[in-house]
Image (tube, rainbow, N blue to C red; front, side, top):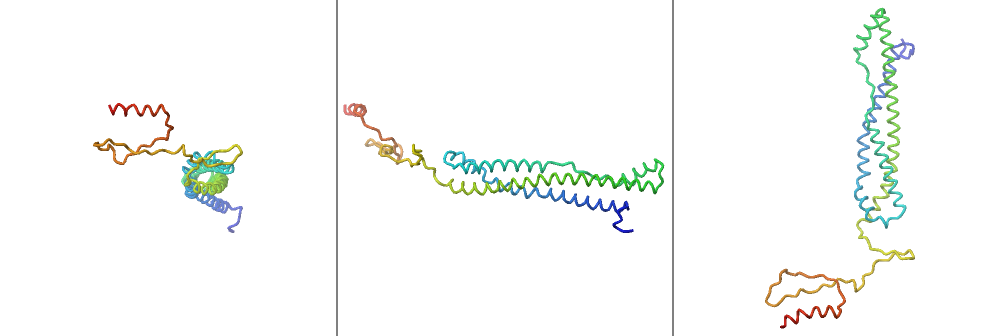
Length: 245
């Protein structure tokens, strides 16, 4: 009998089992993509701490387009993670029945219904064909669903990666520079804070009474330069007069 005789029940079973095996292999192949996705996520979120610290400390000096890229990066990153979790969520995988159920239990049931061995065998064959057809349908639906989720996961990852490639070089190029204290002028121009003489920190020498050792070696006192008024001068001179007496 020809192999492609579609009226033959055995040929129908062979073709259905072949397609079912293809869908099972497809399902296993999608499950094997988990390690690849985890590696991609590890790379895309490697600089999350640096990015967070940079934007929290430099909130006011970042350009508007950098903030747009950051928002896209965060939104697409969160979306890709959610889709990845949905992709990993356990599915209801169809399981083929034990062969003994067909050639023993089901065969006996047909025999009990009054069919001879030949007709009972045909009944078991058609029951088995219907069983693997349903398994094929369930596997195909499950694979199509996972395929759609996998498709959109990679699309979100691509957008996240593009934003990532824009943000990380920007952060690395700016995080090593000391932030300048800038003053926003009324005309919109930016100017560095200028050091003025009155803001200089005065370093004074340590005075030690003759005959006494210094309490701390090489210690200095840092104090702001202040204006000396007559009142402060009189306050300084009072202990000196008492010392002379």
